[in-house]
Image (cartoon, rainbow, N blue to C red):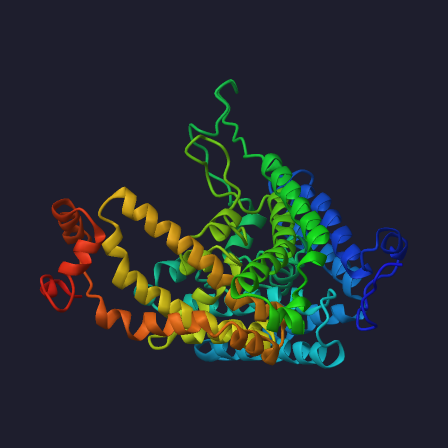
Length: 507
């Protein structure tokens, strides 16, 4: 018999027989079925409902209607919240002063989302079953980003806007059809990506592809200009295949490295530090495979509808990664924390940058991490992870500014630096993110104490001691010293506070 979600799950039970046969819970079965249905329906946007053949209102309606159907199939009566949250925010957008409207929308959306998070936490604590909070988190990104873009377009001068804000500024409040179809369209409803409103309207109007040029005109058209829109089929097949492989790996190997194992007394008290790091690295990687499956499949669905074209690669192949939520290669093989964070949940990173990071002068990093934690919910493990994330972000930034230039003098030293930072980043990511998956505060604290708070101590050293002991130098100076002295050790020796030979070059 398949393991089933608790009574909290209110989605359709039509395919319970598939759940019983496969052993996969009904919520996960419904999610996979809804994604395959969305993938098939998405192609209609490029064929029967192409902008050249269909009015914008029809395309809006098609995306909205099937978004609501899929929402009801997956969540039952809980799907009412998919309409409730954006409806309240639309009332605020239409009725309040644009000078303060964007902040009110942010407050309303976060309060509504927080109430649903708390309800889930009370009645279904610690469950990983599919629930309405996932799509509501995407809806929250859409309605708040739209509110800020409207504020930028109506209330601020162009000279006051950043380049990003200028591109996405909205000068007219959307009609109800435009608004709700943007928020609830089925290709991006379940797992994103959360488009900005202007990107969505360009998609509806068919303006998201290149204008006619020598690269996309059929020269054998007898004098008639024929624009050849790039086909997403190759990208869709690639992403669907990769997402299914991630799903298989998650199902196959998760029982071997289950997150609950980190609470086991024998694991916590009787294993070595290196084994703990190895286990945490594997268990957090397998959890990422679940996200890879959802995001890659959602990205494929968006591509299949015509969303996500981003020009051409140098070899002439099509790039369909404009709104991708994940860059697996960059994340898994990133050589620093910043690079890995930027490659994970990219749509959320864009949203946080748009509504927080670019708009505050002080404590931008802390406020960004704070909003991200609140958006995710109220499990203590989330806040432990994001607090650690802020600490290690500052520590990594300090080390990079202080140490990196000592290793950029030649290829060999730069390679050594990259290897060290790659390995360090893998350990740090596992160390700070397992609490996010575990959800618990004290379970995380207990494991940290049995790991001697080793990386926390190193982070504090990187923040407060290394910048005072190791002087900064510019890359050119290091290169010259390497040429003359032959090793990093000699450079460090000559740059030490005792000899003070390069003290005039401190930043």
